[in-house]
Image 1 (cartoon, rainbow, N blue to C red):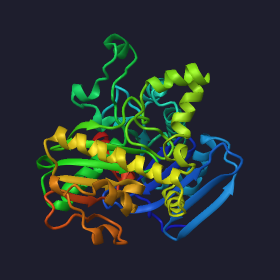
Image 2 (tube, rainbow, N blue to C red):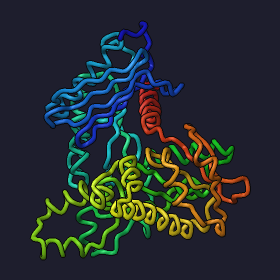
Image 3 (cartoon, rainbow, N blue to C red):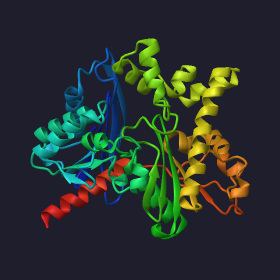
Image 4 (cartoon, one colour):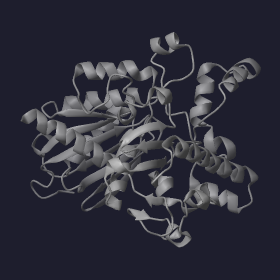
Length: 407
């Protein structure tokens, strides 16, 4: 697994520490070349899984991974195995995907002790993600202390949402005291994809009104007017908005009080249900779309309803955002489901020809990857599939900040 001397020179190591997983990638930010990438998942469970892709092949192993610190040590050991030691490998920066920046962080940020502490303090707003992000920063900074570490925040793109979109209609003093507002998430993806859409079309970013659907196990929508987000579906936390793999999305807040009063559920039990056993999984028992389609094909009424709820929520946000924007130039699908599930794209946009939206059935069904247009030539609204690359966006942001420090 040894790379030629200098093969990693000028790279950025991107770390994405989730609640029970670590994704990583070693990227040349200028060329977008990925030297290596991998995934460690099921951290803390009896049997974890490690997948490592590099220039000479793929390695996979199973075994217990006690915690994120142990997982990150595995990541760094694998990266070091590509050739030279970490301290000699030519890594110019480490980019950390950080989920919740609250009202404090809205630009790529050089990580120091104060930033680590602040992200830890924001864990109340993202209890599943920020604690893991903190561990990632602590371990990576300890191993690579002489390299700039840069935090890129999932909430940053939506920092300047219009007040009417960012504000919840609750007691303003309570909201202010506890930092309650719509923060939005998947911001790195929404910004990257919307910019790529403009480049794909040969248009100025500032000239396009776009609606972007990031559809994966987590799912979100964003309305972007001339390069500036004006609304997004996720809110204080990543729980609001579209129906997702295991998250409920929009729900009447009264449901929570009802469950407390009638079912005797405490806050922790309700929180766990809404985040981990709702969405598609709560409705039909599975959150993987391949399994969902199989169940639909077998005649499962629960699976069919789950699919219909998922699509209905997409169409609901599409309609709302078209009105907010006063019309739309481009609709973009990204994320694992958005990029790969032709049925979801077709059903989400079916029957909207009167609004200038017409999907080409053949183009939509084509087994292609990469950036592509799936609308008909006559469609007034262009419909695109743009694969997201959050890691590349993070690498470039980290590289740019690192270079500015050396000037």
